[in-house]
Length: 335
Image 1 (cartoon, one colour):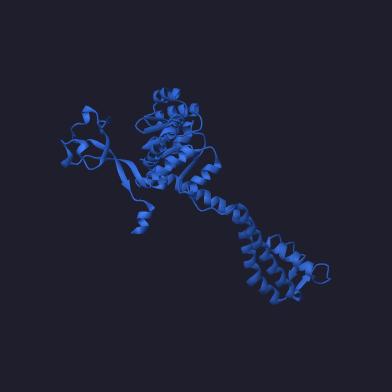
Image 2 (tube, one colour; image 1 turned 135 degrees about the vertical axis):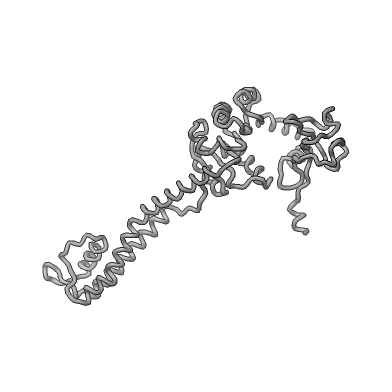
């Protein structure tokens, strides 16, 4: 669970400084009132004796070889030394108490999250593909950061994900117990974006077994592995190497087309591909006559391009895939 973290080194240094400060105050108090103390060897209380007495007193060791004998010294021990002793002990055990408290609080937060989380998105891998997928999810404004769970074996990547407010799970997504911790059995979608195709296949098999109804979207490097992902249970498979290769090929002939594709794939500004239901007024009409630039429609889970015969007339329950205009940063500034 994302949370504000303090550097362990800073926490330890602050506690050590606090303990030394308490010890120094106790030493000064004892040394100033040294006439009210007696030493078992009878040679008086030196500054070293004051340091020794303060140390054994604050640590509750108390050998008894140096002890207060006057009323003022004893009153000082009651009013000053005893509170310092308590504070000193709190500082010493504070780190342990803080760790135990933080673990308990974190465990409760995780348990509470597991009991409530539903229809979230699990992203396997927080590399380039995983980050881009999450950015696209968050840009659509229908997914909050705390509804995205990132699973990765790289702690640095998880730290970066946690800094964005995402839920993180450390471990290999090929293991069913790790996916259960991520709540994949109650997830709406599972995005599988590891660095290796064989890992993607194994993760897809495991995720499909745990979440039969979830939408699984996977990325592979080689097109020859697409059928393996499909057989493993992936609903959609994106071939990253071929997609990049096509864009590179297009860039050699029509570079501006690549810019347009990049614009469509970037939902924050410019143009973006979106989906919406057909309104009652649009039923029976042709998608070509709509003011929106319609690319296709989805009917009963089947995608039809806008030039397909099935797309000649819109039916109730159809969903349109269209080009949506989004606000540009300079437009916001003009306003």
